[in-house]
Image (cartoon, rainbow, N blue to C red):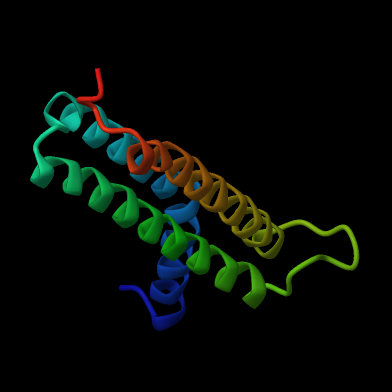
Length: 123
């Protein structure tokens, strides 16, 4: 049987991995949605769904970034000395997840920016 500390630790670990793995998965899903809908982007409703996919992907990756920042901040932020163990691992995963989440957000916004300026039926 698990106690409250073990259950809380699992929740923290899940929040850390949401940024490390979740943000790139969200970017991949957004990329595939835009790619799948691009042949039909002349239809206004489909073109709007491309914008919605971009905005939803950016919001979800920012949520992952906030989760990682919160976990990184709770472990003490930047270390004052070299240490190891679970605290250092959580600190590293929090910083890594924050960076990957923000990078995924920038990539999603950069890919989505083209759909705001170019329509698929301009040819």
